[in-house]
Length: 208
Image 1 (cartoon, helix red, strand yellow):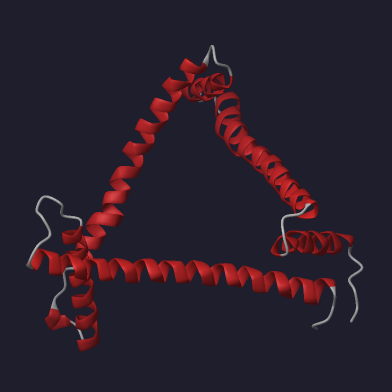
Image 2: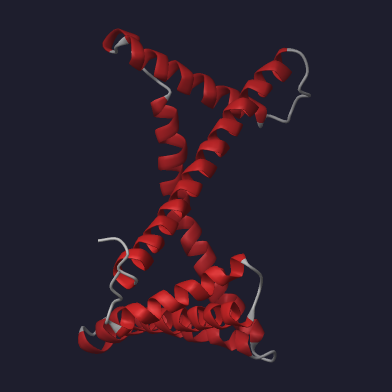
């Protein structure tokens, strides 16, 4: 065992233990580490957003490249800060409305392309150009998409055949939710393993 001589690694190791102390119970050490993390993250992202938005996307194009049309966006951005005072809060509704409308117009076509058209295209297949495993996979996908859509069809009461098909759709939904949950759990476990590797290897030197 050989401890690290790097002060940065010691700070990271001690704060990792401070966060892990929450496994025992909520305590002042954990709260200090949590508040420090939130504060540092807020300061870091504030600087990052200011540099990437206010400087690179407003100051440089307007004052260096003379793209004066972008001043409109800068004014709308400044109007957002009027929400901080009650008397001027109503002014911020105009930039918020513009942002929501513009973002919706930008996102909706891409979502339709990826979530609707691409999904519909994937359910269409030519069995004469595919192998048996590919045909089976395509059939499962087609059945899953169709039965799931029928499950969300509420214009008719789910009775008889419609009830049976909708239950198949529920099964596909549960499989999808379970797979997503398992993927998230694996991601968190990977982060935990990485933190333990840092503690036992870089900090304590127990593992070479």
